[in-house]
Image 1 (cartoon, helix red, strand yellow):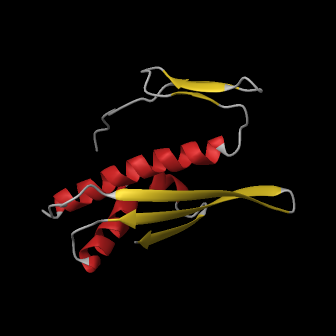
Image 2 (cartoon, rainbow, N blue to C red):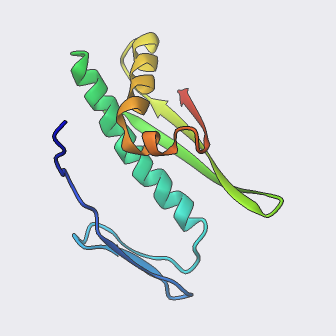
Length: 131
């Protein structure tokens, strides 16, 4: 296998009540006065964006035309148990205009493609729901 670098995301984060985050390419520039819920929201956004791309790739590999763009509503929860912190995730996925069985196949295939899904596999509870 020949590895090929596709993209490097570069960000700068500062903490405290005047905290902020920005990407080197300027697409993200936000205030972060509190680490939470910002961390969970940003993780949900990043994972959802990757997951949409994975759904589109899974559809292309199967020669399925998506009549509308996929939509994902992510819920990332931060939980605590006896002083230990952990995440849970729910991805509510909408694939309008295609058969439910095919849509379900695509969202399941996307977990095998999306690097965020791969990174979290077995590490956090993930529920994916076709809506």
